[in-house]
Length: 154
DNA sequence: GCCAACGTTGGC
DNA sequence: GCCAACGTTGGC
Image 1 (tube, protein in one colour):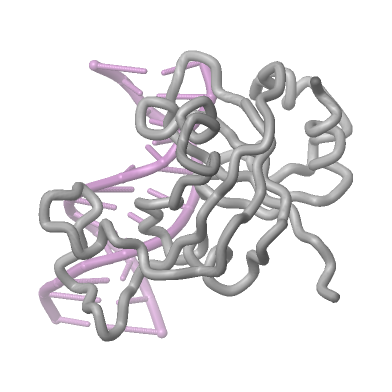
Image 2: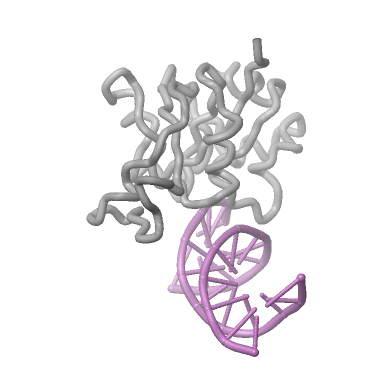
């Protein structure tokens, strides 16, 4: 059996907050809109159902981890790439060879937000990719140790 | 709104 | 393959 992996996934709360996710059917949402190859490759090639997810809010007054979630599906084509009305519509993608793949993400429980400021202040978390200068990647792998430190928050 | 950082595009 | 221009991310 493959080892469980852990991820940090960024979302703008205006678009899909952790509360939105928790309120969704089956507490599950498709992770639409990723248009970066590295982030796509994590979903397409490396995620497995049951992997742990730190649900992070970005571009908001208080960035940070707001909830614990898990990967809830195998990868499949992101439907928004074919939707002409979507801001994620991609004219260069085809149904035969979809460019963008996603997974479903299931919200498990909210935590007292572990803010970016608190993450930076915690020396145990110093090696997290999301804290590295200039990092913009919306999906990053997280070590079990870092995941557990943040997931221990009630 | 500013701007540093960095990914993508496209001319050559 | 190089690299300048451009667009986007995301904290502040």
